[in-house]
Figure 1 (cartoon, rainbow, N blue to C red):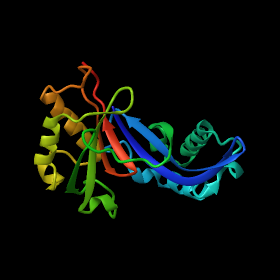
Figure 2 (cartoon, rainbow, N blue to C red):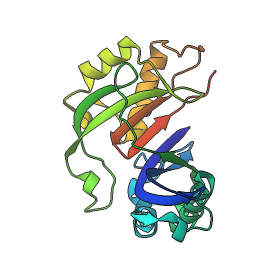
Figure 3 (cartoon, rainbow, N blue to C red):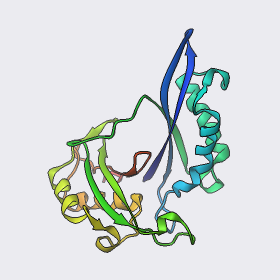
Length: 224
């Protein structure tokens, strides 16, 4: 199963129990699929642009108590979920798996829960003019999400593999797949499986690859 997440941050305030409570809030929109598009996406992150723009217009730098009837975390989450059902394209809407609401600044994970690498790539099979079809680079972060939340320590063999084969490389030249985040996550999960490296519970690792602070893709293999 492939899952992607897009984090849409908005700075806001709300009145809770008579107190004006300012915060940085992030709606993390989740989409899942067991099969990818021909390009190698769950959906193009560009498909979420209209939803991001709606959040920017209606929630960012606003007093939410003047926008929403209820400003609890759960009701804000439901509001964004309802908006996603409206603003996502039909194909993406069918892959909508949910929305999480996160409070406060999101900290980028560091070792031993993450491995960072830099690489160049471009994506094949996109419409003419799509920015991801141009040669460009990312500062990637790889993590291993646990089944009950949180991140698992990265096995040393995987760290060595990433640093020796992906860091400062052109991914199109070292991988035999279109280097989307989804397919890169599946590639690393497959490498762990081939090496018989499993999680603490003996099950295959899920692998999450993040190209930017606001986007990630995860591949989770079914346990045999």
